[in-house]
Amino acid sequence: MEPMIRAVLFDMDGLMFDTERLSIDCWRRAGEHFGYTITPQDVALLRGRNREGGRQAFLKRFGPELPYDKLVEDSHAQLDALLEQDVPVRPGLYELLDFLEKRGTKLAVASSTQSPRVIRNLEKAQVRRYFSAVVGGEQVTRSKPDPEVFLKAAAALGAKPCECMVLEDSANGVRAGHAAGCCTVMVPDLDAPDAELFAAADAIVESLLDVPALLQRLDAGIHAR
Image (tube, rainbow, N blue to C red; front, side, top):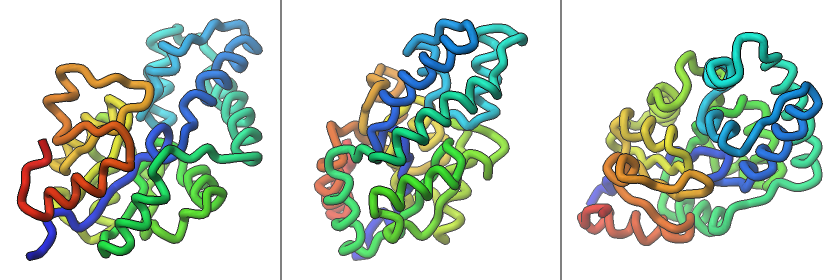
């Protein structure tokens, strides 16, 4: 029987790599440098958004005088320096990628992070070879929760959205996957699932280690929930 899911679309930050906690600290230090107090709750406004989406969220939060581009450059420089030393991999990533390779599943990364940074992290973690396509935040005009990034990633793999599984850790990412018409699975990191996300996600699992069993159930015709 032909599998229902032919392709899997991965988010990156917080899903594949444990970078969200590093980012919070980098934003805090960048804020201090420019005279702003940036809290973890503020950084959560950026989660799942590309640069322009983040700009809109932060200008609304802090006001139009905020030097957003300088804050981005400062925080990104800090984060890049940390990730040059080590890219912290989330539990189960390598096992899941090996499983999907054996299954013959097409893979893409659909991230709000700019694609050069995505590719650098994939290469640093030695997983670039698994992915046939990378769609980064600079390649879309509308940030998550808009589904554009997932629709582009599905098209890059030659798959229909309904044939794709989206793996996401963020609320905006789950909303985007659901809006794209993909089978959307939340693997929570810093965003805890609420009633809205339970309704939007086709499944919520504890870690990437749980995804192979979920796919096997779907292949057997068993509903994700």
